[in-house]
Image (cartoon, rainbow, N blue to C red; front, side, top):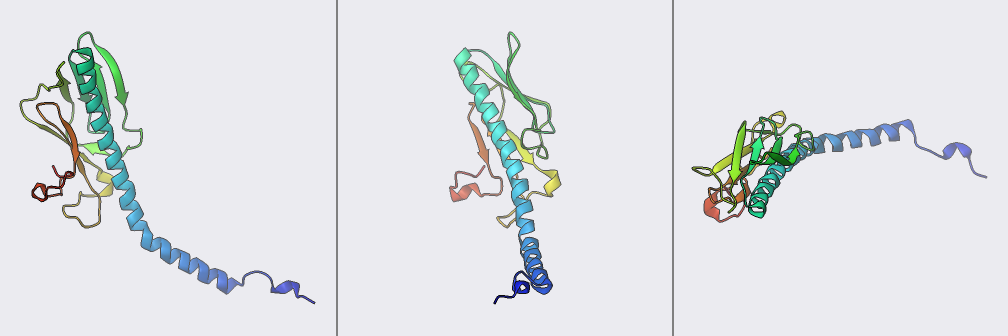
Length: 173
């Protein structure tokens, strides 16, 4: 004959299980927060990079001047034909990277029909996330900030400013 009162979990077993779960969550929470901040920065940087590449490709395809405009300090941007004025594509910062911010404000990069820019020198767009704290300066855990660079010739590259270029790593600025 079985005892119907022997099934289940005691209160002490339940409290021990909850304590173990709380300990595991408290150990993993800082890394999850860093991951979320890094994801927002990467999402914004990739969006800016793809917008710049779109502007360059449209300029070459249409053989006309196409501008990439950032409204900043958030990561919103638009790609527009310069003459006659027409918008090709735009993106708001609310699309996946609401906390990400850029150092450049009200910047326009214009590409010509050959894919070159109107810049006198290479441009760097720094993408940060102020809600995540300061950008890390070494390879220790923390929030990564990224740069998107545009050369005078029109090449667009996303890079990590903490990586030393002398190492030959392609992620370096």
